[in-house]
Amino acid sequence: MKNSLLINAILQKEIDPAFRRRAEVVIKNLSLKNGDKILEVGCGRGFYGHIIGTFFPKISYIGIDINEKHLRIAKVFAQAPNVNFRKVDATKLPFDDKVFDKIICTEVLEHIKNDRLAISELYRVIKPHGAAIITVPNKNYPFFWDPINWVLERFFHTHIPSHVLWFAGIWAYHVRLYGEDELLEKIKKQGFKVSSITRTTHFCFPFAHFLLGIGKIIVEKGFFTSFDRFAPSGKNSFLLKLVLKMFYLFDKYNDMKTLKKGSSFVNIIIKVKA
Image (cartoon, rainbow, N blue to C red; front, side):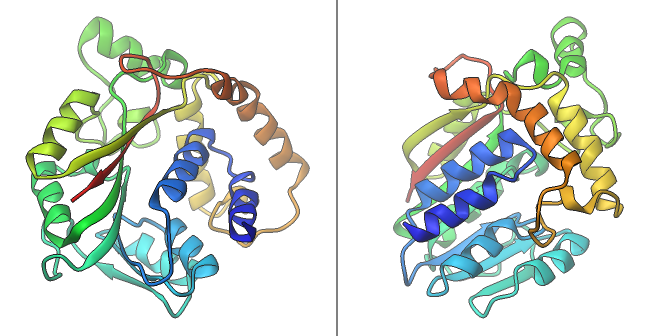
């Protein structure tokens, strides 16, 4: 209970409401317990490694990524004896078969050209009856999340090029977005069994993804470091409180809406078992 309260306190300072909702579901659905051996594929700058290293010292965690810059940050941000980070390609995992109890793969598959191979590698290294949490951006995202790409896709069958990071919105560095049926087909074909599907974030601040993407670039360049989820926690500045209030003005309505298949929402979160 104490760990849950502390984790929740960290997430309440998260500027991106969609990230917070996604992280809450991931942590809850992992059902972490002492002795677990966890692999995170696409660990980025170490958010989940930090959570596990801080609150679950008896869990073994390995985070992998191909981005060396992010890995350097992760190694500083999430320093703990039970946490390890390595540069590894998700389609060529250097691990034996059936070695991990649980796997985290959140917002990763959309960046990988051969996502089927990556999913097959997840299945290969997970133990029988082990659980994996997979999250991806939904193809049917809300209009206000990224109005520019929403209009371009539906009326002109195109979108802003994914490499134009400062303006690409939801397509930033993404090979694809996912429909729910498409993702389920790929997961099941590799042998996974679906335990649950969670759909998150319908209501959002207008141009949320675009604004958050610009903000991320600014923060990573060293400005407004109090906004960085990877910076040491401290007292929230007036500006940070104002921005949090702005983004969460609309997010609170997500608590009142049950999202069904076919709804517009930001993230598809699937828990699967081997």
